[in-house]
Structures are given as C-alpha cells and as structure tokens.
Length: 125
Image: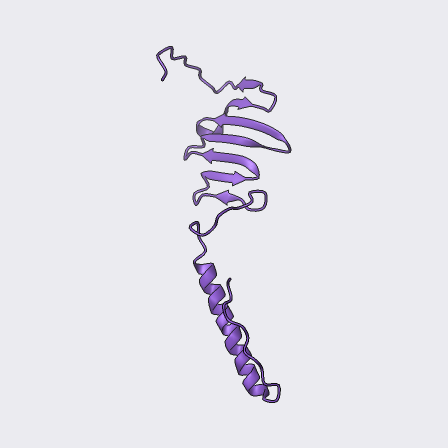
C-alpha cells in the first residue's frame, strides 16, 4: 500500500482547521509517493509487459521490445532475435551493421555477401 494514512475527520464548522488537516494529509501523501517513486528499481519490479514498456540499456546496446531482443556492439555489430507482426527472424550483422546472416520464420537461411564462412572441422564438446 502506498498511502498508509487516512484523512482525519474534518470539522465542517471550522474551515481553517479543516484546511490545515487536508493540507497536512496531502503533504503526507506527496512525501509517501515521492519516497515510493524514488525507491522504485529493479529490486522491486517483478515483471514488465514488453508490448507496453521497452527495456533499453543505458548505452542502447540491449533493447527488448514486444517479441524482439536486439544486441548491438560498439562497432555496429548486431544480433536480432524475435519478430514483429507474427514473423520470427534471426539477424546477424558484422562491424558497421552490414547484414551477414538472416533467417526468417520460414527457416530459410540467407548468408549475405559481407559474411565470411570458415569451417572448423575440429572436435566440439
């Protein structure tokens, strides 16, 4: 509960006293609301609807919006997972944001001209 106090009974015959009671109550509500908003952080938020609220890191490298997650590197490298309008996609872009690999919801993988493919035939764990 944000507001823990209830408005004290007003004396309608003493308007000045009643206004003081109302002013004090409003001031108390303001202080409680300011405290609550000032202390609102990741420790006490349990969930967010990404269709309503975008989650963006300070530098903008991480962005979660709707059904999509994107990560951006300092040199324009990009990874996008998710979709818009019902289409799921995976996009990888290299330095400068040049498209390298794209896969749509149809499962078709497109390797762009800026992508270099190196095959490592070593052992994988």
